[in-house]
Image 1 (cartoon, rainbow, N blue to C red):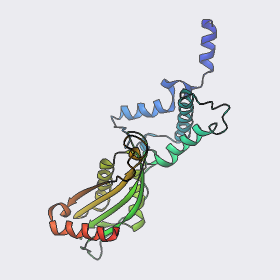
Image 2 (spheres, helix red, strand yellow; image 1 turned 60 degrees about the horizontal axis):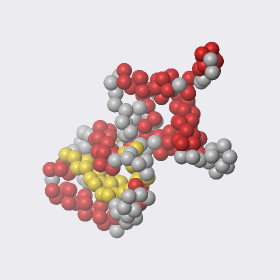
Image 3 (cartoon, helix red, strand yellow; image 1 turned 45 degrees about the horizontal axis):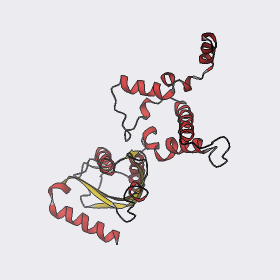
Image 4 (tube, helix red, strand yellow; image 1 turned 120 degrees about the horizontal axis):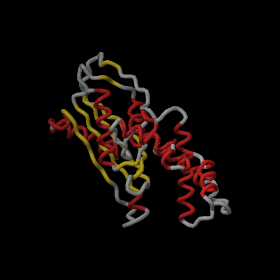
Length: 245
């Protein structure tokens, strides 16, 4: 190929095929300019401009097709995998990792007019995430305990699930996911105390490695009065265990 032919071919190459000019490179450049972190479990919606998410999906689709070809899968002739790259790209950006790319759900906070100051427990809520180490599913349940005060905000029951889903729909490790849910609810509600418990199965253990299909992980985050008051913490955990059974 002559230099002239190479230059002509480069000119005909779509910008999305050039890593330096791809939509992912533009978004990454904005994040770096703002000195913003963009780890797997971070939300980057503020740095995505209108129309770019669809373009990013197309870019991810092209890269996934390269991965399938590298796995020596004939995506041109195999009818089962001809659309796999498109399906997986859509699934990642619009569904299982949507919490990275979508703005937070709208949540209306209400003042605690009746000055409620008794323990509230919400759950179990079904949560779905993905292990950031192997991108395998994490499927489990989440419980939230809230001890409001007269200055706290209250939110609707369904909003707990929406906020948890927004956090969980990112590649995660469970310990960090629970802490992120706690941080978000603390910011929205400002209660005296906040408790989060999550119990989940990790398919990176089911499918690979030890292949233990029975193991679960349970972890908790306690804030404020749940951390300081042993009797409150025991009440929460006792009621949670009754709810489990």
